[in-house]
Length: 193
Image 1: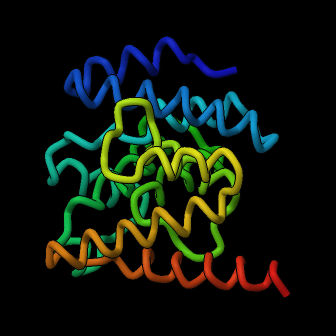
Image 2: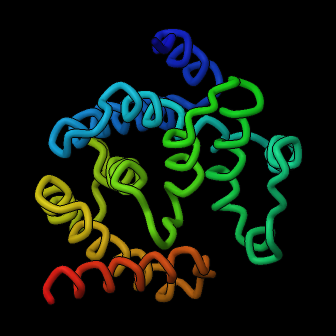
């Protein structure tokens, strides 16, 4: 269905060795999580391969990709360009690679910030990115174990970690991340009722 080898060659030629290896690791982890949760393994694998496709692309070119599909960065995003690649990546995948699968596009679009009302597929890619083989931040093993058992519990733990980390560095926190945190808490609380 998809030309995986072609996409792997594309990222190999577009990304640094570290970022290429990370993307391959995310694709493997995404497929693994998809198997656990009964989601489409092939789509998860492809989203993993492509999730950071524009991560090392010049910001002006990233803005061009976004503009071509009608995504306009907010002022907060312009002041926190670390989130650009999720928007420009989805834009590139849609506008240049002509992949129009909404699951894949949305998973790439929100793999850094998350958002309220995430689908299981979106959470899977978000968590695959955070728990790929080469990741070694504090608590990564906890997030990995949680991701294998509950997407929501893993999201909650990961979001708490991310928000604390960003706040501790006096970094901007994207509103989508805060909305995602509140949504996850609400989902977990509703499940207990």
